[in-house]
Image (cartoon, rainbow, N blue to C red; front, side):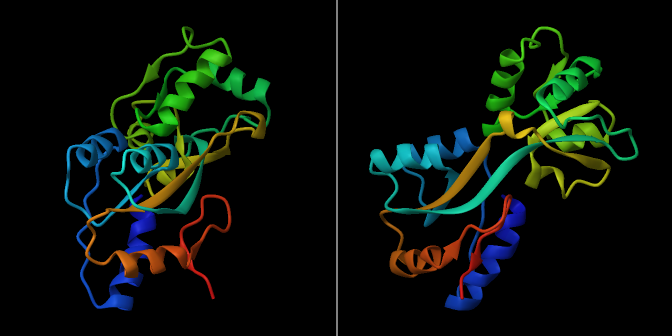
Length: 206
C-alpha cells in the first residue's frame, strides 16, 4: 500500500490542513489489532477482511480504493519466461529452481494456484521475506505477488500479469473507525475516490 498512500495521504492533508500518521502492518496483524481495540481513524485492508470487521462493528463504512492483480517477477536482466497461457505458466514454474510468494493475500492465492496446477510438491517455494526483494537478490528465480508491489523494487523486472484464466484481483478498501473524530471529512474524501485502471491508485474525481 505504500505507493498508494504516498499519493493519497498528501491530498488529504492539503485538503483538510492536518498531518496524518501512517503505520504499516501485515493484514492479519492489522485485523487482530483492530479487533483488540486499536485506536485509529482509517484502516486499509483487503475487502474481505474489512467486510468481516464491518460485520463485527469494528469498522463503520468503507470505500474501495485500489485494485491489484498478481504478476510474475524475475531478476533484472534475466530471461523472461513465456507466461501467456496456463500451460506456458505451468511450464515456467516447473523449470524454475525456486519460486517466491508472500504470506499475505496474494500468497494464499498462489499456494492454491500451485496446488490447482498439480505442481505444489514439484516446485521449491519460499514464503518468507519480501518477494520482489528475494528475486532482486537472486535468492529466488521467480516471484509472484501483486504487481503494484513488484514495480517499485530495483533489481526485479515484471514479466507480466498471470494469464486471465488464473488471475486473482485483490480489492483494497478503506474503512472508518466508529470513533474517528473526523469521520464526516474522511467519509467525504473516500467517497470522492474512484477506481480507474488495473492496479490503479485512488484519485479524486472531477
